Image (cartoon, rainbow, N blue to C red; front, side):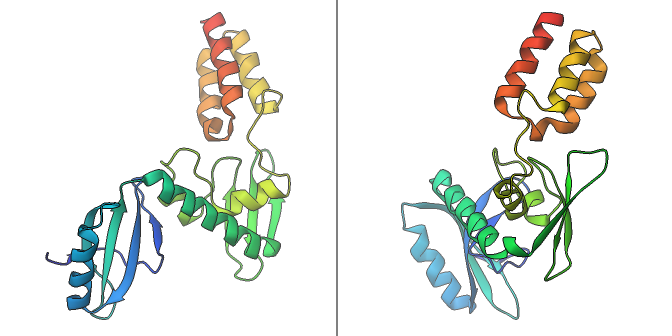
Length: 199
């Protein structure tokens, strides 16, 4: 198996921008990486094993688990753990005229825009296509009572419903698209019924 060039990663569980997750073991000499890859290929719990170039002439072994749900559970658990450890250092400031917050890590001065179901941080962007995916910034915001998914009573949902009832379908669709990831499934069903009744 020939090594393939890929982005470096120091994480044991990685989310990619196409929605896949894989486990990775880092920084082996090439002969050791190839040996480990051959061992993992014989493990029925994994599929698609790769050796990829890491850093300083070292190599990683990446493996895609057959049970992706189990891996996603690990990803979520890791996000919760980090949120618990770092969360006390997050400062949230509401952004005007939006349903978003500016999250600042007071240790690193990194800032991200956080919503109920989205965040501008790289971790969330890399795994945004995974249904129900949240990052540590969203988790901490929810723990503090911010950024919960929009319920039927939420002003944004009521605004969309009012537009639908008035026959402004294009305008309603525009607002819906803007907040889709933030709207709860129950509220989406409510709006679908409104759309059907007024369509």
